[in-house]
Image 1 (cartoon, rainbow, N blue to C red):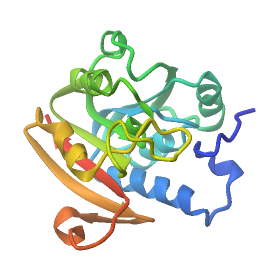
Image 2: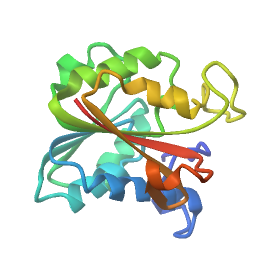
Image 3: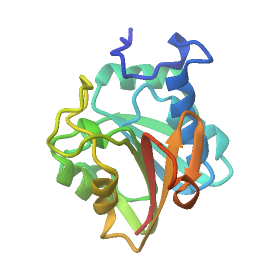
Image 4: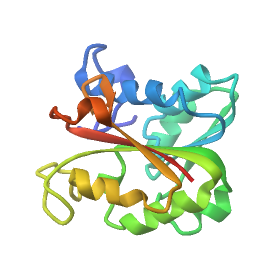
Length: 205
């Protein structure tokens, strides 16, 4: 039985109007407009997002691979979210051997992951190595007081500032920024005057 840690999204165990659930689902539906080809859902958790992409985008994706460090989460995903286009694997997002094991992808999604990771550079390096030239990365994280400062969230190493978040993607040819509050996701130009607690970057390699 997959346990709810307080941060893990398990739709079957949550009320349909749960704000956290709706926020996470909104990100995957947002990403569905951009994905194509071979897709990696990096830190896929219980697997619901991988399933959303596989099912919603079945006409434009070849394969959707979900990777998560938690073996129970991967077992749950395999049992709950079967789709002929999706696969789930146990793996650590900072494992330097992952690019060799998984190969390259046209699109990589990683939602609410980087704030959990101490080895930030290795995580970003893995993503870059696994993304095909011309490929698309869609990555999100909540904003906070900055790198190295405790966020008050039990499972977060820290939460980046907006500036630190934008500094992550200099190696990419282009990056667009979006901001999210609840289910509302707006482009940077529309959100600049408002308080948005979470950022989404869409990067082209």
